[in-house]
Length: 242
Image (cartoon, rainbow, N blue to C red; front, side, top):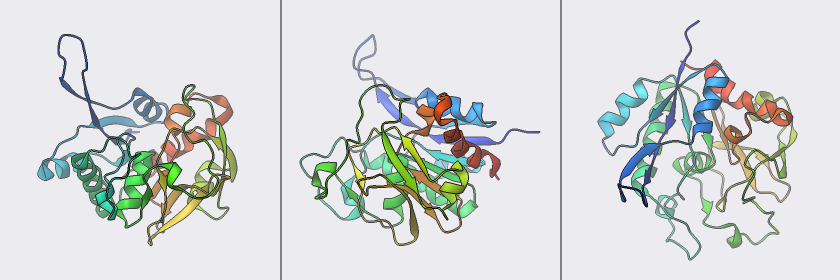
């Protein structure tokens, strides 16, 4: 059986030392690649570009899409000015990821958004974000655990009738956490499918069930036998690839 090609949206890292300081390199974290391979897909890194024609050609060559983590989403994308605690933004990458998402949805191929990718999906559909968790008035858990990326640190509850719960085979579990921005207003055409114990929305899906977004990092958990079911998120993209 031919393995489906799964595109992973790439970012750019800039060398801050060595013999090429300031040199730009296209990359994704290796855990994304390994997670796709482990679960039966062929990973292709989709390198960042500002050329819309190239973005379309890139998307036409994959059968499933993973929107990876990275920069904060530019608040102008959801009608706000930047507040004091926002991190580094990159509007051109916002456009790149949103363009990939739009084309994937038009082509009907499955999408998995992870961390920033989940936020991109929400904002692209008309939702908003807290620019930093400190701007949320309610008591908020620690959502930036620091080290040990493969260690789940806080609880999560998925809606029993959600596509996410169906994919994972569970409604209650623990996740790892590496984000300082939070989903605020869920986009009107998306469903909040999972929440942390503090009420923060960390899972989203569309009504068709072919776009899934999670705020945690399942790619960092793919080798942890205690949460092996996280691999089902990658199997969802691979098994439904078109």
